[in-house]
Image (cartoon, rainbow, N blue to C red; front, side, top):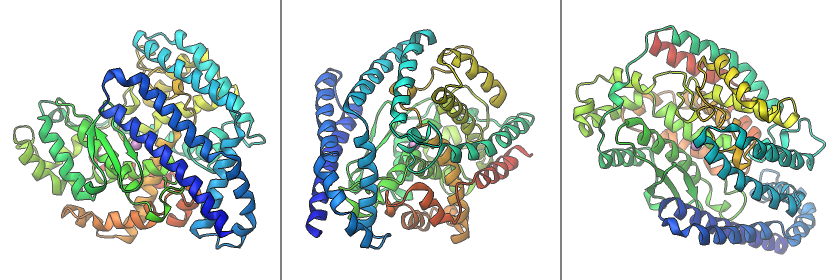
Length: 500
Ligand code: CO
């Protein structure tokens, strides 16, 4: 049995190496590659990805998993090998269930749809995109049908990003959040708006970059096992826990853009750098789920990086870096400015209080498309009606409405809710963290983040994908997914800022 386990680990390691090599090529494409490289790069990527997939879904892997079943049952269910066999078996079953013809048609449809979407958005032409979206929905329904019987047709899509989480779980959380968030935003809208004009102006690029690096270093990002570069869209990528890279972009006219993106991606990277060494080159060397990943990026970006104690430490330093912009500004004004709440049209620019509502709208549409209660042609109207209802704003055109995100054109249905669940989980973890580190605010005021990082390392990061998200959350917080901590956080923070 030991031999069979070793053989399985070898095959998984080769698959992981191939996937990491592909990820490195993708990183290079976003960061360094000259424009002319596109064609040969996409050929190289598709070869590597195919080889990684073939290695992972090989008949031999299936046979080894079957042979190792009795062995797995004797192991401590909490041991690394027991969990490795479980997670590998789960992923193997999912990935081998999908016929190659469906994968090929889906990939081709999505790749064409993405090009059409880019044009449709530029021309504000939803009708041009609609038939492509329709085809994507049909193919996603075919995919979901492979996993019947299910509680909900959307479950299979969600499961690709949040293993074990059901549509009903997400709906319960969102149904509880929606009315409370809508009410909070209304109340904020009736108060005098805070000023954030000082965040716009002229901010030297190198100084922004250096300040971001200084803060990342302080919170514990390990530069010996990572680096930061520039790309059009900030992202984090990992080739193993000893090489986890981030990117950012710099807007010389707006302070928030680079700084908070840097901290957000830094949060993702701290997670990946913290996964246990023993999980290297296995399917356990991943985050528990996308929502858990996002809980970490949001924690550093918002719960830490938009908190008053954080800036009590860093604001004097920021004033030295940008004396003309911030030299005469009070900490209080700065804190309120970076936390300004304003319902807006574009999800990626949304503040903490309004963000989840953008997500809920998308989830409702995805579920409606999958269960057939909504039709593609009606989406612009549905979109605009709900934007008015939830956020009180209506897009003047579809480019700033239903066409704004790339996800659906790429076939990524099921992804959006992980952003909002990440917020919810981050607040649940935060309440637990404050119980265990009661003087955390004081530590942050002194620029100390080591106890906080050690906590998330111990409770979350090191476990990688060993536990499924619901199980991990239960182990760490003793509770299921619960929107109450997030609402408490929003109400207390914005209640203070806006005097509610
Ligand atoms: Co993120």
